[in-house]
Length: 352
Image (tube, rainbow, N blue to C red; front, side, top):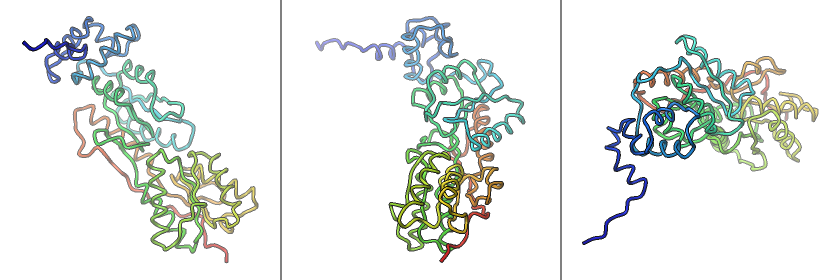
């Protein structure tokens, strides 16, 4: 006689619940050894559940693919919008886009910030579960596998705008043609006759930063120009990092005659560095940014930049989430909107 197999707690729980496709709230409760109202509290993000019990129930919800039926509970008329940072004109353009759609649909907007982290904390997730919004939009952020499962089990759709990393084929996301934008910006400068072109990149942990630099490299190689590692700098997408990287580049023994900045805020930092060193734009230095924020038209001189359609990207993500909330599956989970170069007064041919 073969020895009896001892089941692990997870295996026992799995055996207690029928199948992933038929598991109900009551069966999840029985497997977890708690009441159905306790499982309901976990589903709704209620705080009055012991941490151990909450963890056990969440594990079972994930294990058995539980998904709340659409329309089984009342949704609040809200869209949750979460940023990793909410302190720039870039973020305000995204807010404007989501608000455009929310207003059309009679919905309200809840704004959150994850204090610079690319993944929001569990406290934010608990708040979303309690609010039961129509959907969630994450900007330059992502969710852990466990957080995705929590939203999915509550039938709360989500999408990512300008994902920091690869969100995967199963996560709806809206981005832009970053590689093409970097290519167009650099081609514009090589077309003017620049040969030593510096680049101030955003952080390499973000896909958009890497794509823009790859576009820069492709344009340089196509023009038959060498890529000098000394002309490549990396920093956060901030005025401060643009300023410090600009100073480093412009103080080189052979400084660049043009700089492609990873975003408009970095470009403004390069402007400041140039002014501090007594350089004129565009007579002594050409500068190209990326985003086309409203302020780029009013600075002196107005900035040549790559237009990233931020408002349209946000509107697309909001409509995608609303379609998912109504049970409509998108034709594709990844949407990339086109960039285009906007030429203003910050670029000119280099002085001989």
